[in-house]
Image (cartoon, rainbow, N blue to C red; front, side, top):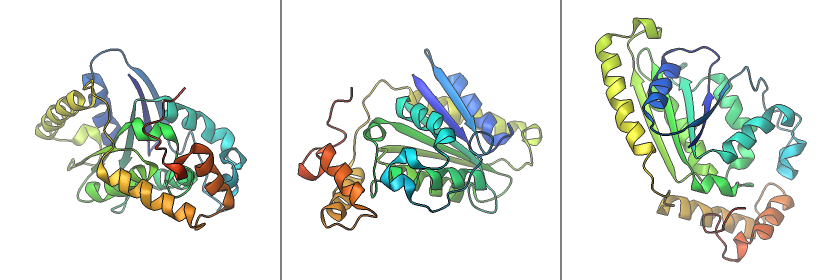
Length: 235
């Protein structure tokens, strides 16, 4: 299994440790790639819209490309972010902004419709679920059919201070999640993804996209003529 982790922080704190416990519980051979934000992508979207015409025209494409390629090749995507002020970390939000053309309303990538994703967030107090939701909502609009959220208040400022009882719960939860994520079953594209794809396709047909290049992209894929990204065999 190929797994890519996008961490919304540079340090290996509580959220990273939760993800690490999960990795240890996923059976079989694993090819794992980890990216840390902002270390591996230290930019903010400038709103230049160059990526709408061609993603490689983004002024930060050189830094984005390794992440883009890794995510496309992965079977499982894991996004981790601490809760900062009831929201994801600023580097995680910047990452989502920089990959906004992955949204179905723009130029979604076929590979995303065949993946599972997990979003993990921890908080010293409240807010983990809210941080998770923002990230998960983006991934759903990328076309990822199965997005799982795991949020938890660790009642501590760092991993060393997390109570043993809480760590025991995390270990139990991660064992259960690992079993679910490693199940040898195909990802099913559900009704929500299908409706969103139909809705955004209608926008492109009506020329309501951000650029004519988006409609051209959809037309070349055959998506405006009945083809679906989850039914086309990838090379």
